[in-house]
Length: 391
Image (cartoon, rainbow, N blue to C red):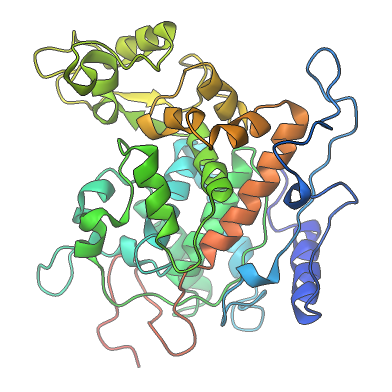
């Protein structure tokens, strides 16, 4: 894996910055057709008779200036901490090589942070204000991992540049680097975020974050509630992050033992997949349909057989069309209007290219949700603790 702080990546950021200044519509890394121009009704995939792509496939990134947020810029730390992004990326590589699961954990952590009051690192705070609950105590966040990885990155950045780089920016950059490390696309990340001084337990606990066993309708509604609504296409693309990581059995046990009180599995799951899921979770379902005793066993989200994780990619969508969706919301993407995007992304090399570009665009949009900038917020010394007196 090449360095994430390479001149090529810096060139992408520089060109994107120029596009913002000039208020141009797009930035292209090559001359290939942008996914923004692609319709699910198009028939020009260029597939050969064996399902491959007869034309050369390359990734283009079309940067939309309107997906940025006021106060965020490229190279925010160029003067105050010029090595910040290199420190973050090099530490991420070390953490990933020590534990590959950290990548999926940080992507999920970033989603959960941005969904509550924007990308402000509020999810990283421990119990605050003398015992008041934090976002991490809310049900959807209790299984979050990766906080120690962010603290490790923060320690190294603090050693180089004390009280300069926010935890919110570290998390945004580490999430992007995580996507790249597991084989996903890179995308530009603007910086200049500041950290929230408070956590928002009640917002996180009151349905602000879609739970792992939510229906797709609930998930789509959660994405659409934000100030700059995520479209159906963007939501389907972002759910492609489920091509990596693991999910505990308690979040899908009902689907394989006693779905909706029927005493039988969810009939939208392929029977062979039911067998694989039961083999991982153990047990016989019992009277309560929970499968294993505590639901702690975890299944890979690679949508291939156990032990054959293939990394980030559109194979997730192909598995959904085969009835191999582990989570209810995932499998429901194949019912209703969202199936058109599942079919596009699952359509071979061209579909993979469209998915990667759509995912990158959606992540740029996600990372710009309601950041604290300027004099708002603070710069934490430890990401788990607010600064009491931020002078």
